Image 1 (cartoon, helix red, strand yellow):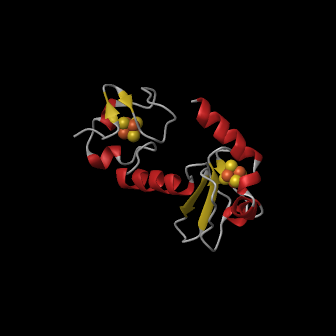
Image 2 (cartoon, rainbow, N blue to C red; image 1 turned 90 degrees about the vertical axis):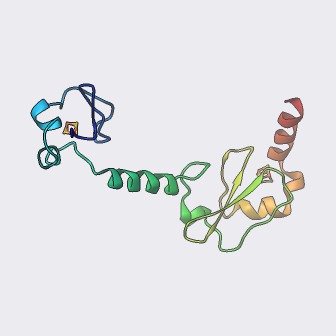
Length: 132
Ligand code: SF4
Ligand code: SF4
């Protein structure tokens, strides 16, 4: 069995930026498991899956939240239809604005909770939605 990253003369290892034939050495890539596992570009599939999962968890729907300024201990509530709440893997809450397409800071969240009716971004969001 060849290396699992080998396909049609190309190495598809995630250690490379993109598939390439440059590192392919038939004696290594088509060799035994003991041989191809010593290749510097070889990665275990389980390890790659764990890394990908970690990146997905660290990056939320609105980019990567900075827990120091975005995480909230209590679940926030707002009457604004563009206000979105997510629960972080640590159990903290994150609030985001669907008009601004980003996470809201701890300073901004109370404004969305208490003054959402006067929010200029909400007016923009309503205008965009009604023109669609
Ligand atoms: S042995 Fe190395 S170069 Fe060859 S396919 Fe596997 S990871 Fe790529
Ligand atoms: S910033 Fe304005 S539009 Fe966005 S969630 Fe807060 S109140 Fe709603």
